[in-house]
Image 1 (spheres, rainbow, N blue to C red):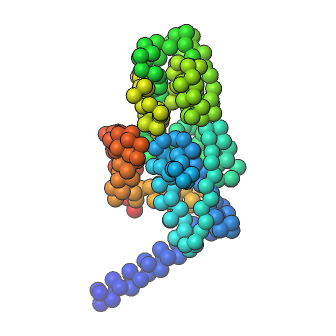
Image 2: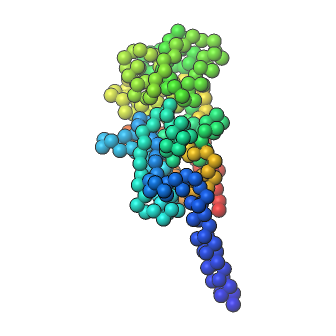
Length: 294
């Protein structure tokens, strides 16, 4: 009798779960759009090493790209579309949020800081990396911190949290720093190599990534104290709780199983560009906290 009850209960539970999962697709505007198009659009950066950058064949790769593709796998299961097409859309610091907001891309895979201003235009998934703003300079420049930048020039990528943080820090310290806006990291590196600027302000992990792919990595160094705190997360369209639930479930499962740390080590420790950034205690704790139970 007990065995019969258990069997019946298990069958009923399986029926309920089987019926509940497709409901996500029925209610989610993003999943409806993806199903109708037979295609999911992934927005990716082209030079945010090692989060999203191009391989030698011109294909997007990286830590964030791997996480996005895990979510794509779950979308395929949810929609019962094993042959769902994946469209990669190149984005930059200026276009990434507008393209999420207007529905051009279904998920943004790069190196984007989660903050309250951006949350007005898109939703963020759980934190996948923790970093902060520092300076990239040429060795021997004499610049060891932001205080040494008085009377010098610094590049910043427009539309980033680093831009806001650097300008606020300059004002706070009452130092004179001429800022030169750039559209992406390669342009910033060109400015540094040509001597047009003395430093580039960005997230330290991205600066180390730039050094790892520079013509001569030994010429460059990351200096100074953090002047911002930047938790990264993948972005998805706002006001779609069902799509957010699906994607959050994927990230939480990766964190709980330990696969998240394996993916991290693949790209950072040492990583294909030899960035050599072992996982920090803060990020490891963040993974544990965000590994939500069922």
